[in-house]
Image (cartoon, rainbow, N blue to C red):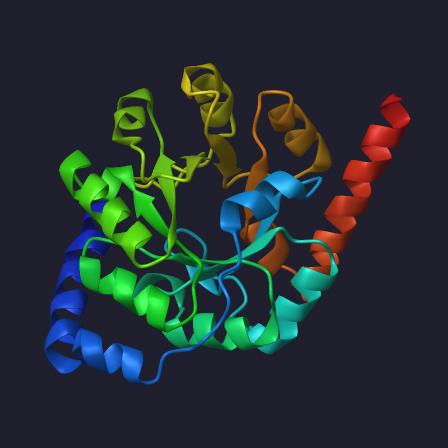
Length: 266
């Protein structure tokens, strides 16, 4: 079976090395997007449903999801409809995103922004900071434990929060003092198959002290309620929102469904 993650990382290494030669770190900050830091972890903890709404045009498994999506048509509506934070895909080859999407979203909303990419190099942390992100994604399956600790430390030095993404029990060892949030990805990054039971299986194995979120494959209010009962505070949802004509409306409907489900159980 084709290992999609391995291909993505190989291409990412080539991409980052080219960018480092073309644009220095100093030049990244010359036109930096200035903003007041929005707290990613606290926003997840302090909103009732903790939904991290994603801006995502395509994926390797589904192809184009919302090819013509524009930040201005999505980001303000996500914020208005109660998103705790927004995740912005910046990988262009596989996900159709750009760093300019982060900068554009930053100008439109005050909520925290997660730069979602395959972070393998310190340079990408400086990119995230310069373009207005509040948090970065570190994927355990894409880097070594040593690399993770180094990148998380540098991210904190830059004033960025960190989301560590894990998919199995072994990767939980990547957790360290510089990780702010842990996310269980229900999507296997080798095959891109999703199974929400991954979050259920790993729930009792995660430290109680860290904010936890569940990512991918979350399709209904009942999924969220079930995962909340297992201690998950946040839920990263992309395709479920972006596959429709009106992503913010899809978020609003999900929040309404959650409230109905909670009310009916009282």
